[in-house]
Length: 77
Image 1 (cartoon, helix red, strand yellow):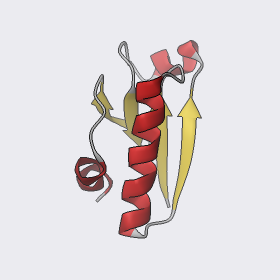
Image 2 (cartoon, helix red, strand yellow; image 1 turned 135 degrees about the horizontal axis):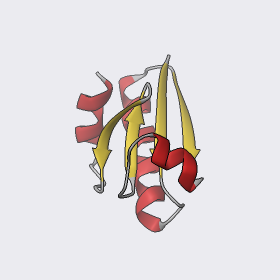
Image 3 (cartoon, helix red, strand yellow; image 1 turned 135 degrees about the vertical axis):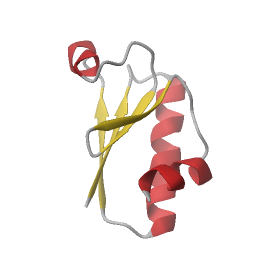
């Protein structure tokens, strides 16, 4: 099971990143959990200084961008 985490305050870009990540995971038919990390201290523990960010299984994959679902599929593979 993949653990997908969207790191960000809940802004429009953060919400779009969460939507794209969910769409990618569903398209790949993988088991996943989606967690939205909004607490700034928790985000900083990842070493992230710019949001939104995407982490997969605890590893930060994207910072400061909102990749589309196709790009996220490559990160989940």
